[in-house]
Structure formats: C-alpha cells, structure tokens
Image (cartoon, rainbow, N blue to C red; front, side, top):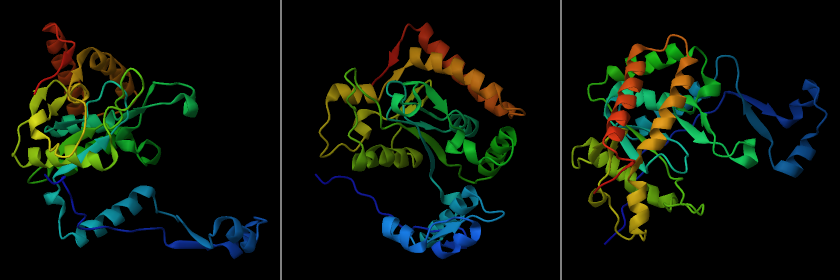
Length: 281
C-alpha cells in the first residue's frame, strides 16, 4: 500500500523592509569590508528589523500570505500544534479539544535541556508558546488574547502536542521522525473531522494504533505501544513543576488555572486506580 502523502497548498515569505548592505558598515563604525564579508560568507546584504517590526509581526505577515495562497481563512484552521522535546513523558501526539486546556498546554510548553548546551541534562526548560523571548507585553494579557481570539472562532481548532524525541533506556529514539511525522499529523486531522475517536487519557486524546496510517512503516510493536502511552507518575511530578512555573505570571486568567487543576485531578484519579502507565489500543 502507498505511504501517506500531503500537499503544501500555500507558502508565505516576509522580511523586514530595511536592507543593510555590506558597504554601509564603515559608516556604522564597523571596520569590515564588503569584499571580506562576501569572500567568507557570500552575503552582500541583510534585512534589519526597524521600529515596530518584531519577529511576531513578520511571522504573521508570512502566515497571512500562505493562507491567502491556499485560499483559506482563519475560521478554517483545523489545528494548533505545539511541539516539545522530552525523552520519557510526552507521548507521540495527544489532542486537546478544550480551549483553555489547549492554551494552558502552550503556556507550559518546554523542552529538556542538554548537557552540551546548558550543563543541566534532562531539566525541562519552559518556553510558553515557544515565544518567551518575544512576548512584548505581560504573559497574563498575552494568554487572555489567545483565549479571546480563538474563542471567537465558529469552529474552534483542535490543539495538539507532538513529541518526536522519546528514547529507550539505551538512548535510542523510538520514533523514526522526519517524513514519518506526517502519520500522527494525519491522525490529528482525522480526529478533528470526526473520522477517528482516539482514546481519552488524563492528558488528552491519544491515537489508537489501528487509527494511525502505518503502511510502509517498520517500527517495533513495543516501541509503538510506549509512544502511545502515558506515564502518570512522571506527569504528576510535571504538574507540580508547572504550578511553580505558572505562579510567576501576574494576572493569569482563571480558566488557565482551572485547566491546571483539572489536569492535576485527572492524574490523581488515574493514580488512585493504581495505574502507573496508561496504554491501550
């Protein structure tokens, strides 16, 4: 059978208006010649952000162009996908249908640090919406804007969290990644359109194995089971860390705190049933 395929229906491009040429450097007090730069980098000019231009505004412009090229509008967006990097807690993909819980998931987004990068191997670094360095106003207001904008959608998108980086005890990745990442994403679109149901867990809806399009994929059955399971003990420890993380944000909307408490209660209920890892088909 054929492997699943997808088509890119629109792309966008945006950059700051200001262009800085190499030959302008001397006037800025930079003693580097155009010839020297071009010989070593091949760069003749670069775009420089000006007043009022931010990474966010430029990304939004590119997104608008892509949507226009694909002839889609904001109410037609099917999913908002967050991506993290953890070796043993986050499943391959989990879907979240509640607005506040989806925004809460983005607010608690993070990746495990590596020893080479920060000397703190395995420590989770929180990076809300992958935008922490670029938030230009307080986090509480930022999150409220997410709730307001998405809350006005006639057909709210489903949220999802993906993690391509689970490893086994020997450090080997359990999921092949790269082009195979399309498979769980196609499941997400099927879930958003009601073609599959998944299975409910305390942290969201996970795919059932038979719902994934696995044609042509060679993966160990035990590894797949692990990728589609939830370690409730690890998640319970994570919720405790999230409490401290969220407490630093002034004016955080109450629906976010409610989502946090619902997650903690759901995990407690799962552990009360003496389940340490939730899995199934």
